[in-house]
Length: 264
Image (cartoon, rainbow, N blue to C red; front, side, top):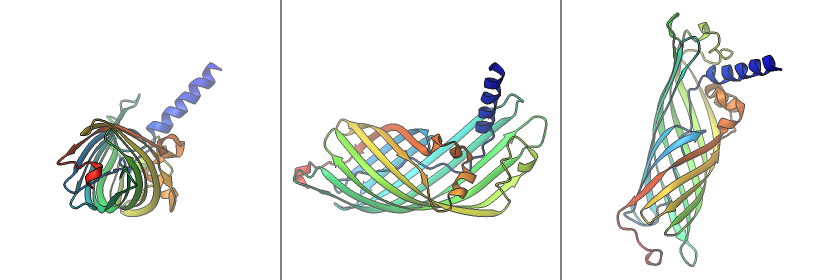
């Protein structure tokens, strides 16, 4: 029984360390703008299913039109028993614009819809003292549409957003990838090729705290739809299921004059 458990644990270890990653979703940006001149900024840490470090900002250029920008950096360094080190780095930025409006008797409900796109660069490589370094890298861009509904008051904001996200990876280049056996996952990557997929990304974002400064919790899920096999090819750990669940924690601060709901 002991040997069986050891073999099982070793197999799980290889599944995680032998997974190549070229894409990670960013944390969903729910701007929750309410009036002209409002500036929201957020910083969050992705614990599961999205990039590690996320920066977000949104500005209301009128009482119903807003703009948003996001940045994400994700890295992973894993050292194996054979002294080899896997180094993953992903850089991504996006921007968008959209419509928002409060409604209801107390103006404590909000509808918003944003669209936009972004660009990223990613590389995953192995550094090994005994053989040549294999590496897989790519560029990618995305186009998204994101409608949402929210409940808002002074101390609590609760939003549900559904992002439809088209992602295209191009200039995929694999160097010595097939020479490093435990890292190679059935030859998914071919040099100078491209692939695309469309994901649905529903998320629930909660902001709790004071009028200006709030803590942020976000729960969501990534649902690969069109060309789902391509999504799993560039994020092989997601085939285990759990990495499809998104969870992020952060802080949010609002700058500028913030009108009361009765003034809007």
